[in-house]
Image 1 (cartoon, helix red, strand yellow):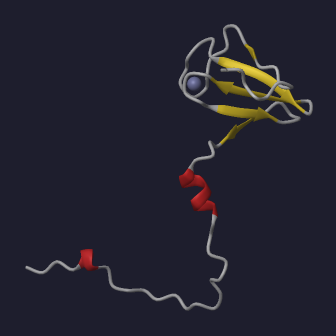
Image 2 (cartoon, rainbow, N blue to C red):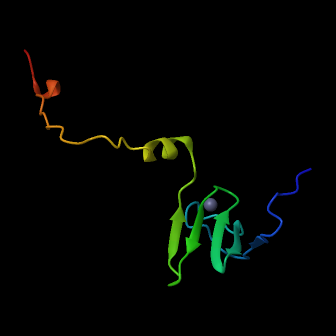
Length: 93
Ligand SMILES: [Zn+2]
């Protein structure tokens, strides 16, 4: 079974479309989500969304690195900045 689970979304290839990320031709698929056109590239995985103005909004791939990076420490209050001397600047000869 290789049928995609998303049966409601019909992705169609755009003939002659060039991927803005990898410049591959005929790899761009387009579909709509709630009337919003989405695109992605089957070659490199690039995907973006077109907003109301028709501008491309690249979507970042949900990788572990991104998700972990989004988890910023919330408790960073009242911590005085301390500037330590950069050891690389010390040139002991
Ligand atoms: Zn691509």
